[in-house]
Structure formats: C-alpha cells, structure tokens
Length: 380
Image 1 (tube, rainbow, N blue to C red):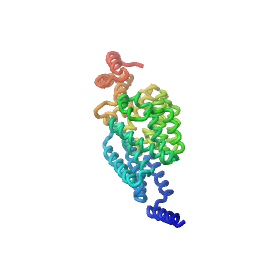
Image 2: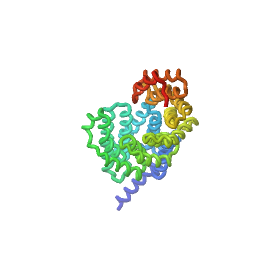
Image 3: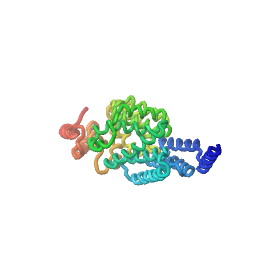
Image 4: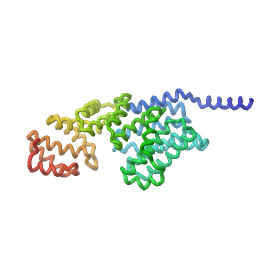
C-alpha cells in the first residue's frame, strides 16, 4: 500500500512539475491547426508559440510551427526561398523527439511527431525531385508510425501516415517511373486500403482530420479522377475554410475537368476577386490561374472582348511568374490571344502572338494551328 501511495505521489509531482493541462494543450493545438487551414499564418504561429512556451517538453508546438511554414510553401510551390527554414524547423522537431526517445524509447508522441516530420520532409524532397532522400525519409517515417501504432492502436491520427503510404505506394510508381527503383525497400502498397484509412481519419482524427480530407480531395482529383468525390471533400473543407485558395482551386478545377466552365467560373471569379483585394494566400499564382479560367469561360461563350481582357491579365502574370520555362498558362494564353485578336479584326496583334506561339513549346498542336492562322486569319 505504501508503495502504491509513493508511486501516485511521484506521478502527481511529475504532472505538477510539467504543468500539463492536456485540455488546454488540445484546445491550443486545434485552434492553431484551424488557423493554418484558414490561412491565418501569423495567428497560427503565435498560437504555437504559446504551445511551445507552455509545453516546452512536448514536440507538438514546434511541429505545427513547421506545418505553418509548409502551408506557406504550398501556396507558392515554385518559390524555394522557405525550403531551408522548413527543413531547419523539422530537424529541430526530430532532434527534440530523439532526445525524448533516448530517455523513453516507447514515447508514442515522440514517435508520432518524428514520423510526421520525416514524412513532410520527404514530401517536399519529392516535390523538389530529390527522390533518394525522399525515399529514405519515407521509409524511416513509416517505421516510426507503425511502431507508434503498435504501442497505441487507439490513436486514429497515425492512420494518416498509413493511408498516405498504402495509397501512394500502390499508385505513384505507375505514374512516376523514377520512383520504382526505391520501392523494393518498402512494403507493398494497397490503394483501396489507403482510401479506407484516410476516410477513417477524415471523420475520426484528432489532429490530422483536416489534412486527411485534404489528401482525399487531392488524390481523388489527381489519380482517381472522380470529380464528384473531389467536390465532396472540397465542399466539406470549404464549409469550414471558405478563404483557403488551395481548397477553392481544386473545387473549381473539378468543373474544368468536366468542361463545365460556367460552374468553374463561379469559383474562379471568387478567387480572382479575393486576389485583387489582397486577401491572405490569394497570391499572383492564384490570380493568374483564375484569370485564365475566366478567360476560357468567356471564350467559349464567344464574349471575345471579355475573354481577351482576362487572358491579357493571365498573360501579364505568367510573364512575371514564369522563369526558366514557359508555363502551360502562358503557352495557351499567347495562342488564344492570337485567335481572339483575329476575331476582333486586329490582325497585326494576332500575327505577333502566333509568331510567339511558334517560339514556345508545342502544346496541343499549338504550332500547327499557329502556322495555319498565320496563313489564313482565324474565324470562328
């Protein structure tokens, strides 16, 4: 009996010393996560600064500060200026988790946040096409996620890692052959199992619910090519975060895929106006894309002047944003402006754009048609 009382006393002293009010901790973390997805990055960083200050021995604050940087990168993916900061933040989380695991190799939180850090570092390395390093991060991160699940199978959040892995390990090698050589070091993937795991987290996750919904939206668009399913998850996300340009873009693109430009234009008009108002996250890349699809809508409806207006906006932004290579937006816009100027009887401008089209990469037979319209003006 004395031993039990002694152990309880020690436990209470430890809890008091750490001052861990887990209700407060969860409330702060969830508030910060919502601020990230609501594109309130400065608020999110202040919230996670509080987490770091109040719970200095727990890796969650530092991890989610890194996730704030991750979303800044996602909204301007071709800009690599924040990559080093992101990697440093993740290294800091990994080092902190390693220190915890050195003292207690079964600390589930340390395993979870280290695994998550490795996973997100691997994602950015894959985006930057550093495949070998990405594969190593993926392998190490996956091992930690599995191990943390074995110790605490009630933690639904870890299934985000399972779901992402099982799905992409099955699908990605066929899409990106450069990845295939690395897959011999990994367990076999399972697309359907991954989808089920992600859906479970999307409804029942604690910290990763929103991220799982985000993945379900993206993979249904990119790989499953199920626009209704993409819209379902997109709408759920937008109901909670109506001013997230990333979610809005994917929602609008489902209608583009279906060639339903009147519906797509509703979403892209909203994105365009938010960009013009300078709302957080609605940067020039989103404005360029919104201008382009608004131009497409007017072009299809034979509203030539309005189409040219928005394509000119998209053209200007593309010339500013495109660096080493001309984007598909610029290539298409230059060609379409040639056609539109022909329709408006502005032959000199049309010829100028057709000639530039021939200097750019051929896209959907753009060279063939540009040569044709140089000989004979385009008429609908």
